[in-house]
Length: 356
View 1 (cartoon, rainbow, N blue to C red):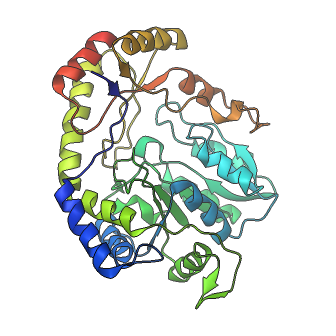
View 2 (spheres, rainbow, N blue to C red):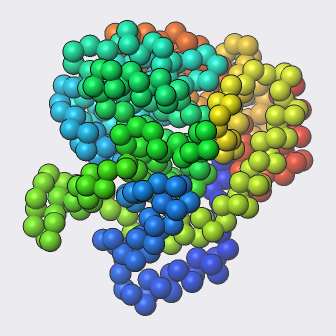
């Protein structure tokens, strides 16, 4: 039996078919259709946010966020090297200058106390990541940003449904982005979202994702970042099943934790936030032990993921003048275990046995 790190959740086909029937009735396939608008409204309610714009992926969501924040070619953005490559590749595509700040060795998030030492006259924004859904030090980041007149853009790809001090994590920062890729906790097959409190900014984003058009007239430089009714239909189905998805993932996450907490170091979770059970990362003593464990697992057709690896400050197309030794260390010995709805306890027992 093949066990991958993730298996996308699929709803009851009959449920999905009901939404497809509505698409056939309206003949509206894309361009802000009724299902897309319904999904946005329901996500706003579920996530407790004022404005959410559904786009075609989380990567383009970041690039549009930079535009909304008024960032220009050559501007410097401080971010973390411990993230998926899209976090910094989006900066490079927009010709923004990446300045890496190392991470906290316990939370894996950007170390906010180190931020001030990285701020230069060219710095215009901070791009933190809620790593594995674990919230950053949002209050300290906000204070630093206000003091230095910087924008804050949160890459919240993993933070669906996360709250901090009983408030949506998306209430922090000038703008936040989400990924709705098939591997995510909540997905629309492919997709993403832009979230911000500023309604005028969302209206501007709507123009940008539709070629810059308003009333069929180009008003600003735009791109095609809309998503389809078929993707929205999947999202509406998944949203209906979120309670079940979270319950199942919680069982799997807690079973791993009970059996591995005394063997491996783990991410320190923010005590003021909830766990959305998106990932289960473990830390090995060194890269050699990780490699040995990975080989044992792979031989049994079990494929966890070295996530995030490598540390982004080591990539040759993303040169850094600010080496990040903590990120490099964590990236070299972290492994995310299989976690998805339908993963059996027998499969977990096999994984745990091979790790001990």
